[in-house]
Image 1 (tube, rainbow, N blue to C red):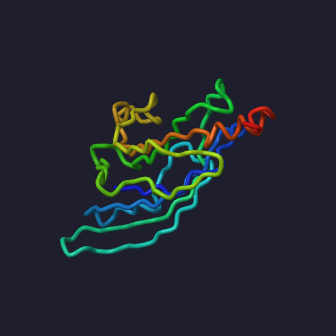
Image 2: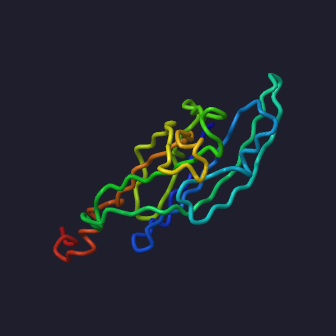
Image 3: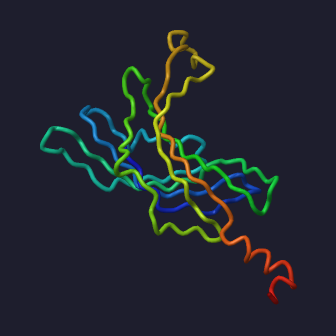
Length: 177
């Protein structure tokens, strides 16, 4: 599974959210798996997914890609407002337990768009990795008490673009220099 993150916008402190737009792709062999209809973005308030491509490759693998636009819940640390660096997470979780399916990151092609523009923000420090999540519930099935779920975790940092321009706009003396 891979991710191409091309937009991080609408960082909204009062609403505790941000909006992320990205391409995602999968390569797999299980013909019954439908990654687009089972896509789960953790903490997404809204999500729009549009399938772009669906191919059967010569080696028998299935390749599916989609465009995703999601508004994701995030509590910002406002102690250094309006400055400070914020760590934004986009987490995509498998709908199945790890004994059935585990994500493997396409580390080579998972990247942050070098031309990503977010008004008023600098987005950087992109990373992506896989981890597992165990919930503190068995969801009503005791035999699921030890189930883990695979997650792809995309992390970027967001900090205010041009803090000196903010200071100049706020301090009349700073504008004269």
